[in-house]
Image (tube, rainbow, N blue to C red; front, side):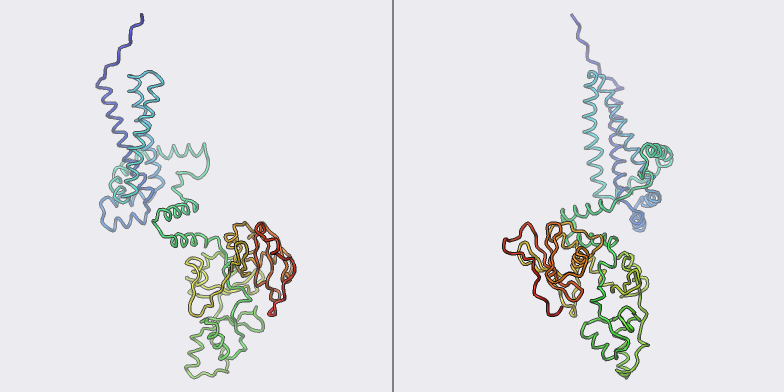
Length: 443
């Protein structure tokens, strides 16, 4: 008969071990909170805390001089506390339970305790009170940073050898997609308004937008000739409501400069003649390439204190013009003043047909029709139709692409004005026609 094995008697060593486990859990919670707070901290924010006289802010500023080193050390401390705590708990459990079961129970219990006490609770506190946590933990982080710095750097170096690439050694970084997702979540949680979310997304898209996509194209530019009288210039300004107008010589590609309404009015107010020469009123025009990124252009216009720029193509010919207002409209949406004639770019005819202005952006038509039309070479629907057909379309000429039927509904000279868009899957049996429409008298 096999004698039953006596249960081990608890001893002081086990009590000390469990006390150490508890201390390690608290340490993991402390450094986990510090890690979260430091991740959300920036050098500029730390400086503002110091200016506000918050206790411990000086240490936070010093830690933010090298945030990558700080975060690496905190990550190492959290990991060491968690692993050591689970290992000690497993050793104690092994004295009272048999073999594999001891390690399973120790791992489950230890992981659950660490998750609640060392992850969820302290990191939630750090998110809610980032400044307070950062300042209160900075002293201990700074104290341990010097002795543990070389060890953390060595371990990160070893990790980069195994998996080369950008990692924690080069510092914390956030991708644009991650920021966009964060903004979307903030809008869903009603932290920010839908209009604010759209505006922030528009700011991100400025870097991916080129001047050609937002400029007023050359055929739509309001210009005056240097040979016109000052009265004719003012008539154009009053008619179109522009305070700055490009001036050309001989032909519209030769931009001589800009004339400002305030200069012309000052001349007339001072008794200058309406028919006399006014070349001295010309101001220098600012020229930019059509493929210049819009965000770079905005910064450039602000630096040069220029409101309007002439856009030129790769051959130096005038392609259009762009103003600061055009750029701002990319961020905040359409800005309509008392002189603007509001133009309808999209007119929905029914559930599957739209009449669109040929200047409508291809990506906007994609959103409207839930398609994926090519937009690498063409910015507008008119350019897309023109480019795929390979010639100036006749009025009524059609093109099938993706699930859409595009019809050149109105053509003015060599320019497409209106395009009829129809979803092919929803076509009515008697609806679509492939014959040319009646000629446009204005064309």
